[in-house]
Amino acid sequence: MNEQKCGLVAIVGAPNAGKSTLVNALVGQKVAIVSPKAQTTRVRLMGVAIEGDTQLLLVDTPGIFEPKRRLDRAMVAAAWGGAEGADVLALVVDAKGGLGAKVTDIAESLKDRPEPKHLILNKVDLADKAKLLLHAERLNALVPFVETWFVSAHTGDGLPELKRALADQMPVGPWHYPEDQVSDATERSMAAEVTREQIYLQLHAELPYASTVETESYAERQDGSVEIHQQILVERPTQRAIILGKGGARIREIGARARAQLTALMDRPVHLYLHVKVKPGWDEDRQVFRDIGLDWVD
Image (tube, rainbow, N blue to C red):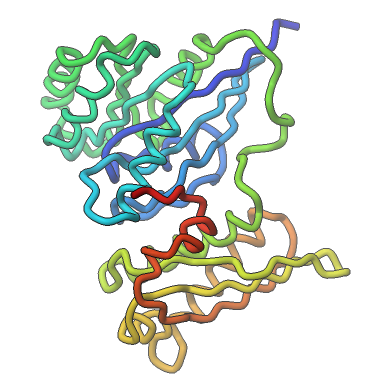
């Protein structure tokens, strides 16, 4: 048997570049929530992927953007914090969206860092093929990337080659997690993220970044099932009404889809109970930041 290797890959990029979809695809199952809405990821999350004798610790970071609120500042701090101590930095770019100031600013901030850097042009299945090489040339002129990859996290194109290349760059060392563990997230925190994903997927056009989900209690029943109680925090009564829906139809649908997904992820029955609480200024509350896994940033 070959020597075991294990290392950390920090996945960075602008919002909506497809970082979480990429991490899920490399791991081989869902570990990070995904929605079409930018800035879905709020905290750093580690996905654990296996490639031969190598364990890849893939840090999915929040998108890096110009922060306007304390919550934004905390998310950006979590993104750069997730890149600390990485063996490899991977800049993920939405090849369909092109290169805006956000992308070039992030690239500029990476160029003097000592870690080996890979450029991953994602969503190539949707991109203008004629522009792909132009994007690659422009970014490689800014940053000394070890290699450039053209992939689709959605279809899987280019991912086996990317995964092998990342594994080749990992240092020799023992694996940090058991072979069957796919994430460092607890089931309690994953439960809150799955519900938040459903809110985004079902209401992203109606509800802005004005909600979060807290898992109030998480208990295992004697029959092996799990009972989870969560509260959804919003800032205004009108937002509460949106989440509840007519006659409570929307929150029932959010709960039903979240419950089905959690049952599949945990491989056991889940009893999920949701309620919505109006809490003005929740995104300025230290306890809420602590509960969702973000550091308080002044």
